Image (tube, helix red, strand yellow):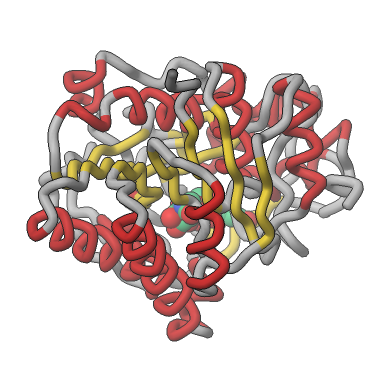
Length: 342
Ligand code: WQD
């Protein structure tokens, strides 16, 4: 008799990975995590257990590029599907150390695909990024708009999509969903799980949270001369709980078709930096101090998802609004001012 489906989650201790583990555990899946904790900590998985009320079936501390260790994980479990988050994701860093980004992001993905094939596992949900669209000439963006990645991080995700697409064309037993997330933010509503960036945050939401808590003095708004309504950058912020739910729903739709299918995960709503700061101020009960500074190199004016493809294919849309994103991010910040205990 077959038990509940078993899913391998790579990068399961990371921001999106940990929330997805909870979502899968909450929906009866058996979850096996691999993570090398290079940008996360075992503390996140302790919180996963606390929130979900039950642990993953196993946690393996391995590097995906260690193919022998990865093979052993596949020997020990019988996976129905893989959700692949493990990757490096800092845009600025990717410009400094591009070879590492290609090695880890593309090499990790090919190592995984090769190992999956060797063990007869052909169902994958792949973590892609809206950054593959690069300098968009219009919003909202559909999956048919051209990819024009502008940094090694984005290029590495685009290359992964290309490689996966080619593998799927040659090996028709594979079913892969690549999800291009827009800007995942927020935290689990319990306040137990959230985003723990190392050092000073690069991304605006954890930065706002640290300004609100007094750890940072003020938000630097990177440019107010963009061709957007208030001149500041516009993004499609998306609650991490919706991202996690999107992965669970994706798993349910892996068998709709063979081959690679690509979907945006966003809300379809654009929010400027000033609008986000104002929303965060409402969530934390005090206005966020900010100053306008110059543009950040490599930034683009606006990235907003056209979400109609995923809505049509799965009948699914993100449901949590900007207020919930800010309130949950703020709750996590207040309850965990220094991140996870280890
Ligand atoms: C958002 C907006 C900034 C910080 C990146 C990746 C993308 C994705 C999410 C990754 C921009 C402005 C920011 C600050 C600011 N996924 N900003 N002050 O650059 O849209 O996307 O993260 O894994 O792939 O590229 O996100 O949060 O850095 O910036 O004014 O201190 O906030 O200019 O307009 P970004 P972000």
